[in-house]
Image (cartoon, rainbow, N blue to C red; front, side):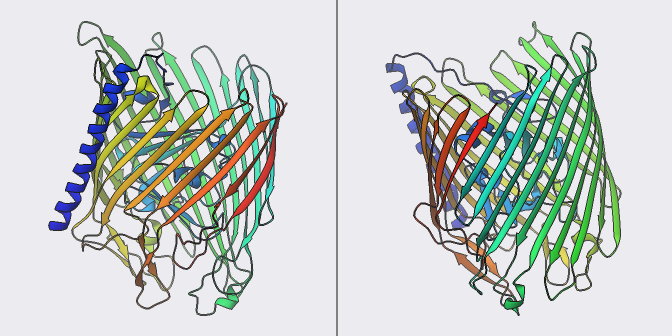
Length: 632
């Protein structure tokens, strides 16, 4: 009780301090006479229909493809390290199993979508970010908090929505990238984008390989990785009111593995994991009633195959499939006489079939029914609510809801935002059926249930040159599924999670920009123990300077991760250890030789920091990389 009271007092102190700073900044802004900087409005997927970023009450972060390119981000996981509320854990080398947790939740409570297709592995219920390259990505939309009312089971803690690069309708363009660097690393990518009056198309391919390093302290072999991504998108106007779109994506990731707690670690030399994934979607959009009515029909599929290869053991294989069919209709209308309001009403139905194959074959179906309302009032107050009912053939039916509000306070630089909602996460096939001779599944498991709310204040100083946001959140979980070496059960009680997220962006004149984040997270099991791989304190800082008529750019970034707990499975039973805090600094720069040719270079882990994100696994030391980008 005393500890929780102290934690809440700390959170209140942080919020109070932030509000004081914001008020002081407003006074300064009133004195500063200069042209107002208009922030670009960004459409985000914060529900079943798109909405402008400032008109949603949910905690949203958008990472653009331009930001990824300028900061030379090679893996999506590294971009997510800069997002408040996120914790990233990579097992050793690039390409290794990489889990992402948001607001203290588990990795399988975060839904990942790529071009509208749910990308998580049906077998274990989560998405491995290890081999997800960033070069073909146009934008990443991150929503924090329960989102199951919109996206169903698996979005109990948040959503990462990845949108790849699309075509354009003003001719064709070919662009390419090549890069080489430390640990015999090489990256190559090519992108074709183009189209005509009635269609656009994009095709892309990226390949990255590295010989890596020894990810454990056993032996001296290098553990490398290879990642391949092929992507295609097309949009066709069948008529003025009917549009067809399709996506296809194939990825393959192979990673050398080793574990220092294995009873025979020397025999793990030559071991590797390989994951291949094929996903695609086909959609039809029809508008009518002078664009007031929009109907969408979409079918998508996701096939994931995994292999674990160890010299002294038989090959372990799993195959997971997910098929989805969805229909939704949205109707928009205005009521000028009532609150000068704009309304959007949406209804939809979804069907999902998941299959899983290992020593046996398993399958399950579910149906979801969704209703959503968006309202805009007096051009300052925004309301979004949703209700969903899921019918499951293996579990109890589930009802989830979501409500969010935002208020752009008139005659101020403030925007208040808040959201509340529920989410659920179904047991995975592993948890439900076992799938190995030594591990027995539990068919009586209940889905995990989450309840969360957040409230925050966004404020801009100096006519928009500095924008800050502070958000307090609570995100608790019941029916948490916990496993042992033999089986899994639902825990009694509540897993309690709360914290504070701070973010700031600075856009000065003369090409200087900066940004920073800080997150305090408390995540505890029903028994009171601190959850593993979730630091209490984390944050990031980035700065950039563009000069020489925008031809040259330099940047630097730092990622801080506080002390956190992890499990040492080398003991029986497993013991809890503490992983030390660390700060990683990266720097880089680029120069445009012409409008079509650019050179760049960067240094990762500038100070060669030694640290661990997962117990028993080393991480990369200092590395230098250089490359060229060209377009034709």
